[in-house]
Amino acid sequence: MQKYRLAAIAILIAMLAAFPCLEPEVYYLSFMFSVFMYVILASSWNFIGGYAGYLSFGHAAFFGIGAFATAKAASMFELTPLLTILASIPAGALAALVALFVGYPCLKIRGPYFSVVTICFAFVVELTVKNIEFLGGAEGIWLKFMDIPEKLSRSILYEVMLLLMVVTLAVAWRLGRSRLGAGLRAIRSDEEVAETMAIPTAKLKIQAFILSAFFPGIAGGLFAYYLTYIHADVVFNINISILIVLMAMFGGGGTWLGPIIGAVILTVVN
Image (cartoon, rainbow, N blue to C red):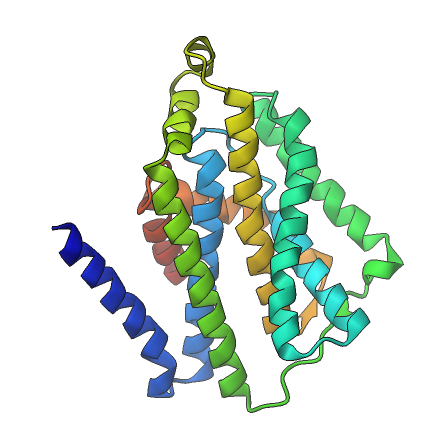
């Protein structure tokens, strides 16, 4: 049964990868790009919000950090298209590093207090970026796009975002079957009981929070290059955070498949 399931997944991925070969309109490439991106965001948020039960409403901050880090690196060093795409990886690492410093004190707070703190964190990051001229300030950052036909450039970024989605979902699937996933589910059920069972709750929460920030940071970098222009109002929009939470919870938080279902359905409806 497992072999058939893996074969079906492989066929689906191959079909999605071959979609640009059908030469669809740019609109459909853009739409699928958005679907892949929100699957990544919802699945990543699920690491901390679904498995551990810590409802973060500030994940747009990590998405925006990745976007601005990639855009700034590309504009400062005049990176080639390939290097700009690769720059999204260290941008994701930067978002993960920020999550480490923010998560250490914030994850000591539970319930609605944690949610409020994460919202405030997202607003603080947005205001900080807006008020630093080096990061584009109120004007934002322009990126030089690929010097190739638009449809081909969109197809390339489509494939890159698809690859990132596959990697994210593979990590999510592995997490759900790992000791880390089991520990996070124990935290969601009853954190105090989990601590009495010698489960290192603080360590597991930090790990999940860092992991949940890394992939949105990379996705933000790819999104910035896709738009060729970013502004703090776009990538730090609180509606992104709310939409991510709705997608994960709509499909079923704490499951591998839930965020995929929620992201696909709500992106279509949106």
